[in-house]
Image 1 (cartoon, rainbow, N blue to C red):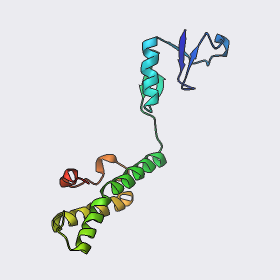
Image 2 (cartoon, rainbow, N blue to C red; image 1 turned 90 degrees about the horizontal axis):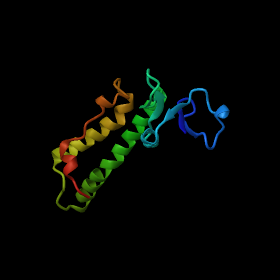
Image 3 (tube, rainbow, N blue to C red; image 1 turned 60 degrees about the vertical axis):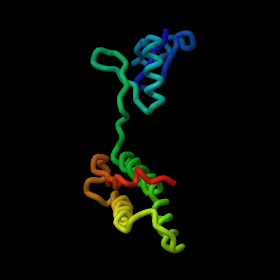
Length: 143
């Protein structure tokens, strides 16, 4: 028989563990539930049991420090994602060759990058719904 334990976030099989050695909160799971729970756990979900004692997956509860850290990671990655546009535009200016961005687009890019830098100091930080939004034209740019 296959079991899961919310307290240990582990799976147990009575063929490998004597029943007396299993955690107190074990719940029997079918093969189908086992695959579902394992897939969810690998995706970062946390195993639990619902009011009926059935296994479920929940999003992990993160403390404020973890949430802020994850949001800074997003912000840093977003800055890296658009930095090449600024660098290309600067290079084109220095080489006196036609520009890939208009002056207006370049200004929007710089404003967006500054909003990203200022994001952690915002009163809305780290609410993901309040993240700075990239100008739509950025998605159309190719390297």
